[in-house]
Length: 352
Image (cartoon, rainbow, N blue to C red; front, side, top):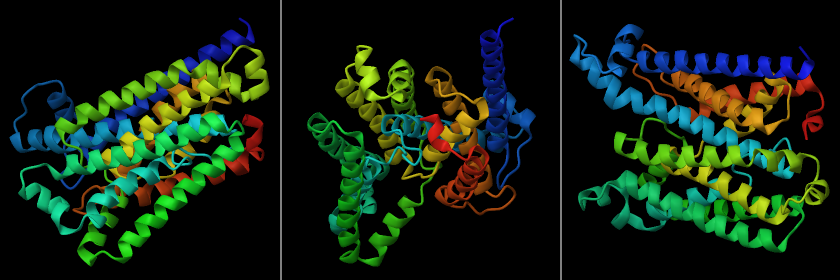
C-alpha cells in the first residue's frame, strides 16, 4: 500500500470520526439546557416515536431541534466562507466578513431598526400583521446584496487581490460609520434592540425559516465543493492558474458570490457571528495536514458544525435559565484555537 492510498484512507477515517462527533454533539445540544432531557428520549422523538412526556417532545421539536440544526448550518457556512476568502486572498487572517458583506447585512438591519424610526420597528411591523423576524432577514439580505454588487463591480476593474481586500475593508468601515451615525441619533430602545441583534443568536430561527436557511446554505456548500479544483489552482498563484486555463476573473467572481451567499444568509437569520470563519479553516488544515480543498471543504463543514454545537451548548449554560450571546462564546473559543495553531505551526503562510 503506497503513501497516497494510506493518506486517503486516513482522511476518510478522519471524516467519519468528525461525522460521529457531530451526531453526538447534536444529540447533546438537544438534550442539555434548562430542562435536561435524556438522550434516549431525544432519539425516540427524532425517529418519530411517541414519548411519555409530551412537554419534552414539544421542547425538542419546536425549540431545540431548529436551534441545533441552525448551529450546524451556521458553522458550516461561515467556515466554508472563511476557507474561500483565505485561499482567494492567500491571507490567513481573511474571513467571510472581509469584503464587507456582513457589514452590509448589518447596514440593512440598522435601516429598519434605527433609521426608519418607530414606524417600522420590529414591534410596529408585528402590529401591522407582518412577521418582524422576516423583515429583519429581508433587510439584512438586501444590505448584503447591495455590498455584493458593489464588490463584484469593483472586482471586474481590479485584478490585484490585495487591493480588493483593502477595498472590502474600506467598504465595511463606511457601512459601520453609517450605522454608528444612525445609532447616535436613535433612541435608547432602538439602540438596545439593534445591539441585541449584533450579539448573534441561534434560537431565533423558526421551523418555517429553517427550511429557507437550509436551502441557501446547502446550495452554497455544493457550489463551494464544485469550486474545490479552482481553489487548489489559486493556491499556486494566479499566474499559474491562468496558465492552466483557469479564467481567474470569473473564478474570483464565483468565489466572492458563493461566500456572500453563505455569510449573508447566516448574518440575516442569526446575526453577525465572528471568529468561526477564521478559526475553523486553520483548525481543519492542522487536523488533516493538507491544503487540498477536495478534503478541506467537507472537513471545514463538519468542524464548523461541531464548533458551533459546542458553542451553543456552552452558551445555554446547561442546567440554568441563562442564555449567553453566541458571539461571545465563539470569540472565547475561536481565539485560543487560532493562537494554539499559530504557536504549533509557527508559519501559517506555508499553507498558502
